[in-house]
Image 1 (cartoon, rainbow, N blue to C red):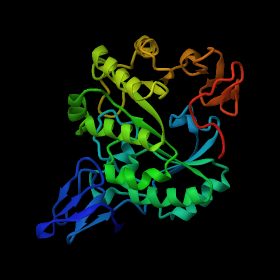
Image 2 (image 1 turned 90 degrees about the vertical axis):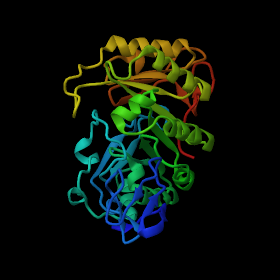
Image 3 (image 1 turned 90 degrees about the horizontal axis):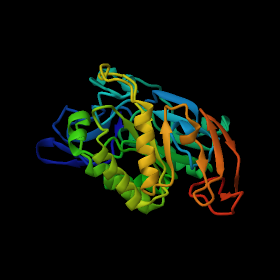
Image 4 (image 1 turned 135 degrees about the horizontal axis):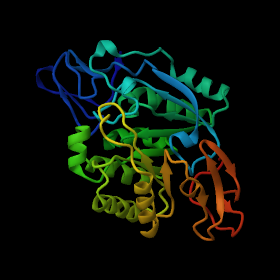
Length: 337
């Protein structure tokens, strides 16, 4: 255990956790919604920030990030825990903490993580797999040391971080993929035990801070695929920046949603076309074997700039961030510096 950030002392040794939008009021001896931040005698402690449960070298496209150092390797780490309770979670075996005794992981210091990233020739460190907000202390110190070592930092998150937490870690972040699960507050309440507005606030704030943003929506049949809601989601992204890449991923039965069928590819195609027709310049399909919605094309001339086949990437028409065919700049972060 280590002393947690964003703990505010209250009467009777209660603690208010200001790390995420839940703002849990925690009684002595109890934990917050995430089950990994505990009140011990009036002080807030992290139960997971010194326990790394996963560490892998991933292609950056797996995050997914398509306009950030394409073809590069990202050293990806996680500690157990999440502040959501999604029935469709793909990593529930490490994100779901029902009891603090179940928290697992190896003690690996931030300096060691940075050294491992450098040794494996990664260009970035990604805080991912579970919800990095709830291992904030580990992510923050690792990000600081990674930046000092010349590495980029990537956050893959549900976007439920508080404004204060984002203000603290934001200066060390280069890119983020935010999971915008739906454009319905009811969906968030019923499926995630959360709210929509804080996620939208995080996306806006990250954009304003100059962090490169991409957004992912897992399309679940009958749950978040109402055309009117998807149209509102697209309108939100277009209003913020038409250059934000939007990844629409295909759902497969998982965790507590075993009775829900896989998303039809035609449904994803329809929403990607709707996004394109609405002016969103970079809609992408996830979990689809379809190059039409995985390649990157220049919005000015239409030529293919980046070819993707799974995680294999070919930079076909990009020179110093510009289209090789027409010379127009392509939004994103494409190289060192």
